[in-house]
Length: 359
Image 1 (tube, one colour):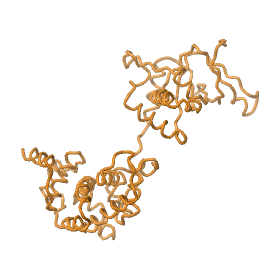
Image 2 (cartoon, rainbow, N blue to C red; image 1 turned 90 degrees about the vertical axis):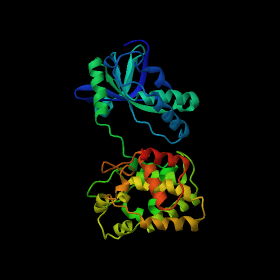
Image 3 (cartoon, rainbow, N blue to C red; image 1 turned 60 degrees about the vertical axis):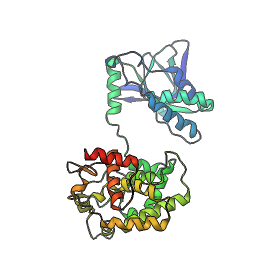
């Protein structure tokens, strides 16, 4: 064994007949011992994707702001040298628990976790105390470029980003996520008809809204930026607005009372889709600064709008070639149409969208 080594408490195991080791590594050592080989190396000669530096500040800020309550998943790495494992016992469980020693001159290449590594380096420079925390590392023995590339492909092949709805449901740090959950509790039509896990609704679902759509629409309603504090009176105001909207959406009430199938509403009407919820949130942002008696009176006119997908006025706005569109332009043009139906004045920028539509 080489004279100078990195030593880690570790557990020894096996995957696909190959030895592997799980060790706890102090965060302060992560930038020093893990290599990321992206600089001026073509993709076919690398074992990882190119570092997306725009992701680093977000992860780093997460560590800094939540230094007493954060979670980091393990880094996976390959070691291109012979390692030495000293078990704590000759038999029993102890034979796979011990000290893993890796030569200091070995190249330790990250197969998964390069953005975590870069973010850790930046976070420690801002808050050195983080350096005394640990991150689990799964070590494999490097078997060459082809094997390392295959490891990267295998590790990422089945990775699925969670839906925005379930992220909203479980995120207790995001004030806007908490706002969305509050809307589901406070607004009757939301409490019974909201899909809490998925960000899209299947054809046979009995739900009418998604939690992510409620979050985005209510963020627009209150003009809230990410991380901005939401006051209790703002939550109540938002709930009052959505309750007033739903009171003048007879089809929503019929779905709530199970007098009509939600699937039938989605098939036949645009108001059963997120683009309308988002548009109503934008309209509400203009209405809420006005007296409550005024905006509640304005919302009564929602009942007079023809929400059917067969209404040709929705084409080019909520729909494109007969299909519902959630694009930003579609939301703005849909909101414009609803505002005009409610007798509200369009802003200069909204009028510009109308001129472009008319071309």
